[in-house]
Amino acid sequence: MVTRAERNATDPDLGVLAGRLLFAVQRELFATLAEQGFDDLKHRHGAVLAYLDPGGVRATELSRLSGQYKQIIGTLIDELVALGYVERRPDPTDRRAKLICPTARGLAQMRAADTIMAAIQQRHAGRLGQAGYERFKRTLADITAHQRDAVSAE
Image (cartoon, rainbow, N blue to C red; front, side, top):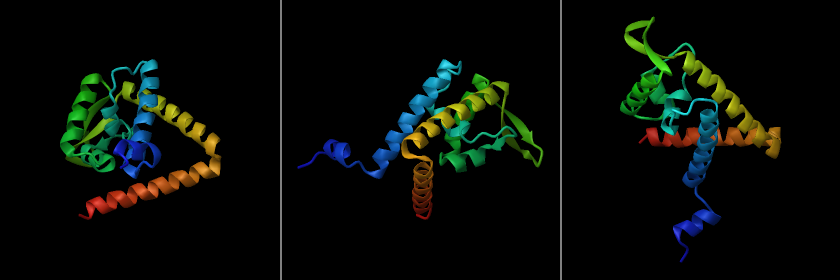
């Protein structure tokens, strides 16, 4: 009988592969950010920071984009406000709504993260070739969208 550990070592399923990729990218991203002075961030903050725009984003949109519950996003926003990365501002299109906007520190973190992620992607593109890497990303994006649609249809 093959154990789950043995199976995942030789023929990992989609969830195991996706998790390994996510955790490895997060480790490199957040370790490099920490070296650049953003050592107060935790991996969980990525659910907000990955989708933050310079002009601001509503919390409900952050929830939708990240796939996280609104309550979780609210907690993460509170943490990032306390750390000085984001602030809440009135949405000029709807006074009842708030935009989550990056502060100067948040903008600096966004620039740093974009540079780090570009380097990670370039490294993989160099290994697979640009066309192979673009094909991989399209396929992964398609599988991700199909999986999210399957879950939301239930």
